[in-house]
Image 1 (cartoon, chains in turn orange, yellow):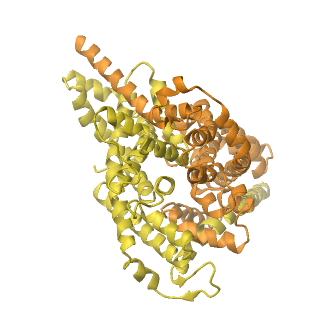
Image 2 (tube, one colour):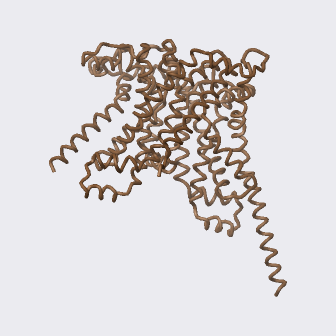
Image 3 (cartoon, helix red, strand yellow):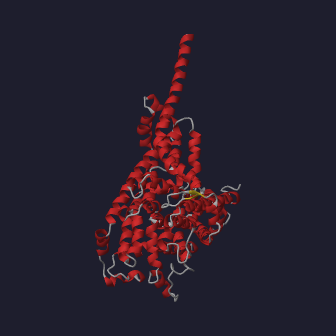
Length: 274
Length: 305
């Protein structure tokens, strides 16, 4: 009995140290962001002496184009999340429930593309968007990410688990296939749709490489690109930079905490494919 | 009577063929937009990257010359390419095993009945949902000469170091950050795998007097092998393409000490605007990744039995 107790205490200690390592950098960042003293990054504990302030948040909001980056990020993320949910559900439904010529060929090509490392796409995508005169524009930022193969695959897998009777009942009721999709399948697939929405939101919000390449003036940056530019622009104004990092992290953090169960479910059902 | 039956069959056949035609019609309608987007932004770019890699394609220059294999020849003669390759391999070898073992360990602990389990799970997962730019910036502050890490190490009597501008520690510092961010992510994958292991296996082991450690090595590890396979593939692919952290934390420096292959692609394509050369480098990188995953599948299959 005593051995078990010691083991439990040991485990708890390891976990608390672990949690400190995983959360520590964020706590550090929060403290520095409220600091009045620019040199606090060596000993954030000293903030109790130098005093708390909100001026760093005011500064990045008022004197930097932070609000504009936020607008860009929100716009891109919202549009891409909606289109990804809709298109991946539509295409997933088609592959799961409809028979048509070329089905295996198209699906096979999509699966094969999953094996190609994404780095290959960067240069041809840039040249394409450049040819279309869409560099530094919203279409250039949004169009390439409106649908993804992984999401289509996820929705197909999900729809395949839904009973055949559902389709039959819909057909007998005189539904056409769009009505079947919209009125029967969509209302019954909220968990899967939520998983796609959450993953897309998180992926788009945090996406860095494409907006870095597809934009070239400050007012078109997204939050991650803008933050990366601040790192070189503000240099050692750490409190202001940290205030930015905190604001950028809040939406994904909130979504994660509120929808935690979907994250775990989604990873469990796909085997963790991003 | 015969007539009626015949009529019925006729109607049935007609209905069948019409639903088949109908299905075709709806299928192509539904797939039109998604497939158009995938064709333009996925299929065509994959194919065209091979074509670009045979050209001397520069953004500003007006003539695009066909140069055959010259880009590839130049890549394999470039010292920085080998440096980038070495860095990428070191990075992957350093990150993947530690990250995988740590993720499995965290998942094993999280699978026990402990107080505050959901709090700890959330704590370990938060770095994985946070923007890579954000975590990189926070670690730049922590790693900097007057940063927190040096203060903490100073208490132990270790001399301060400028972690990211010292060529000996820059790459390792970025590797540590990567392990910190993704171990929590893969913990969740392992956790899902662990929950599928039947409790009866552990009960039987306990009856035979197996210790916790023995249970871990002889039941948990072999039972989560398919998940382990998946985790290793995903983290290999991720590590080989590491970019965000390098861009934010060190810009490939000091003196190319942190230039990875994907950074090399970016540098050539978007700093020097040598797009054809960059495309060729990306194909070389993709070739390396695909070779490694094939080798892994052969020598470390998900299900060996």
